[in-house]
Image (tube, rainbow, N blue to C red; front, side, top):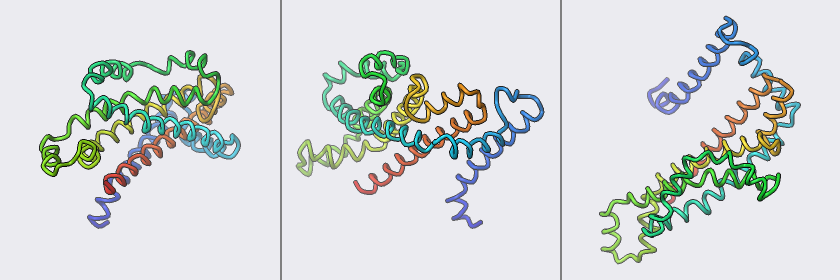
Length: 254
């Protein structure tokens, strides 16, 4: 393999090799009796069950529901989290008043508030989306504030020397400079929201992939349950990769 190809595909090859080695090690440990099959099924059984889950359990329907709920929560993170972070970054009084509250929410186990959301919104997808949104907001707000607050003063001075208005400075200098931090917040918020969406689906037995995991667990179909969990992880990775692609596109566009 050429050095160029190795630099391009090397990290992906290493990641795949690590995953394969991990599953091979688990398989060997279970076969040797070090891990109970009643706790963790053989990886080969999980992969066989994955086909069964896709073919028989209408996993694509559950997948579409979870993706819709996660996308709705992510849209809320963009439309609410970023503007609120910008507001806190530009208004010190608001930042002093709300900063500690936002940081506290980031550390709180928001998923435990799902009974309150059930009372407010009922047993529906709205409950799942709203609690996912609330869980994902703090990192988006905090990283937006951090990114805008970390813009180098020399860049702002350059903008003033060109007689840019405050609004022009924000769009042409501050926001592009803060994009890496903003997208880091969006990725963290998406992770929190995705975990919460699936967890609440499981807890209230409604919705998409979390609901499917609960149904399979109730049947004690261990291999299929693990297969569904692997599917959830794959969906999360796809969402994360999509946000990274969006970040790269915006960096090239701005």
